[in-house]
Length: 637
Image (cartoon, helix red, strand yellow):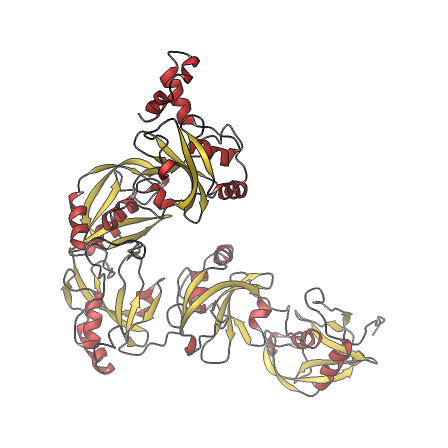
């Protein structure tokens, strides 16, 4: 041993053995170390000793080092607090002669040394590549899975309690995608790189896997041990296909598969990773509108993984609480006998088939809306809305190009009220019944809703994503009052509300509330029966109550010529003004003056300016003082 040793008790010694791995030991005093070594005394981590029996030994440092280079390397001192030297030495000595399972990846000499110094087993010897899937062997029947993204980090899906081993008591719960240190996730459990489906599917590029996995960080997903667990997430990241070999369905179970669009596909599990299901000519059995009644369907026997594809799935014996399921052997036998049979899709879908196999009775739990219900359809950043009128039909308000989801290109255009098949309007998009205001408003009678919606069919109206969109229409039909939750204003914005012949102005302060100036009697107008001067009051009210059925828009009209104050200042000052009584004058201080003063710190009324300019340009400035009533008449035109 040529070099001079300078270590202190509790230090970690890194010994450079031949091969890709290093050996590690804990220095305890007087030229002695404690270290974890395999049966053959070789603990350098050679691949032939990937997993074997190991023993903790106390030996002379010179005997352990031999002719190899070595150094003191307390490698994690910047990350963890090292324990007291006397604690490290005492615990290391107590471990002497302990026999442990040695694994080059999960518990090697380095894990042992780090555990002694920091109280936490960790090894930097893991050599996984970015995009690799890590299989972690938890206690119990399930394994946990993670995606390695480099720099000792993984992305993984864990359930609500942070336990992602798939225990039965956590069959279904909230899950969250997290980025964590590899060592923190693995803990003391065995693990291995296991790109389990590489022989079946083409893995995506590592940079794609890592990017998409990172983008999923903090996403909250429904965690279910059967339908979407840590393995589904990991395989979806690597192969763009969610799959789990942890499926525990039993022969005779019904499998619900979540396709894109309003319907789900159903299949009967018959064992050995096979299902029998009813599908259309094109292999689509999700109930898409183009296949609603125009084709025949066929019963097929296929691999579960081929039928599920990238979609979530779950065991769902949905009618077990209503009907007695038949014996599994009968379900499987009858399902297999049906293979090759053909049926017409309009009267018999995949749910009918699956239910008939399990219970001997055909029934479908597909869409169950009632006339008068509002249907929310998820398209892009906005939602489309329609009124269900029965018999698979809806009435909805849509733009000329059938763009009614609130896209910017259809911000303002002509639109028409149409009556169409629900399936044609929904297409492949998700949808749900959402009678969103039933808690705050009384819905009209279904017959009234349907009658009025049908009476509107064919009407052409001005469509504006902010002031009158598909949601305004649907809500107006159900409650008799137009309202949209799709408003995207920000605190501090000015809201221009189009009244008859003039505009009312308010300051948006967030949480669906505005602050605005109204004249005597609580009128919202910038004109009144006494158009000159009256008492005014600043009110704080719900945005929807102020807007009512009128069109509105965000209009920060002076941003090009003036610097707006900070939103927090605008909101604070507007709220301070609530309850104040001010002199309301249509020319010198109206609702617009108030709103612009809050946003810019200076009162201005563009509508008064336009009225003055239009009404008095011919007679000169001296005419301004002639008659305030004349100005009011101009404003109210």
